[in-house]
Image (cartoon, rainbow, N blue to C red; front, side):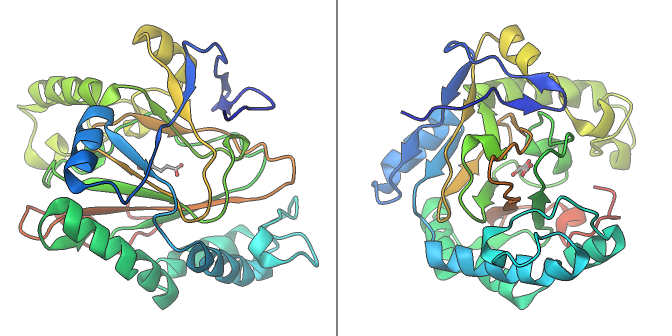
Length: 300
Ligand SMILES: O=C(O)CCC(=O)C(=O)O
């Protein structure tokens, strides 16, 4: 049974630790039969795969990433880059921003996103040739950084493409709950579908570009559903599900599943590193806004 040493906090809101408000993601063995995996995905809106990826490969990327970022003052002096130990600042922001924009184009990152294990998994799961959306995000979150991903479901940002896509959130290193990995609102795939149907009705008269936008007049700031995670759990009478993620794990979530992140409060001062990438069937409609590499000015 996983435990937390202190309550999780997200954007200034402390999550309740009451068992009816906070629970744990259910891990799934990637070797289960395909039919079973489809059932779990439909039922839970996510699958947390333990050890689906090669831990050594993930850690090699973590090492490479933080080695590059050493020049920006991100890492504690003399520390091993694979640890990702935060320097405590100051960080050269221009340097970090430039590197992050480059990192999504590194061949090491391309190799990681297209690693045969992942590709084989999606070929099997989608029962078709997969397509990896070109817009792929790498995120690092230093300990104590107050702002984190607020609650949303992914389709808000991907409305011009198929709703048959799968998001992969991949921790690039071990990520116990205190390091601020993703939390999922239990049973929220159905909620996300309902919310999107309501947004679609409201957005119906808007011109196309606005209708598909996460930032149109009917949406909240940033496209978020809410930053107040404890209030959401109360309102929908459900639980946030956290997890003790390890390098080699991957969570696949549906485009309607509500999720958010919490503040990295790691006692060891490690930086949370993760990537989120999206797969769909090659034959399905791709949201054209996602055909380019991520950049911190792409406005999506
Ligand atoms: O890593 C994060 O903070 C957010 C990731 C996310 O929203 C996603 O994987 O869809």
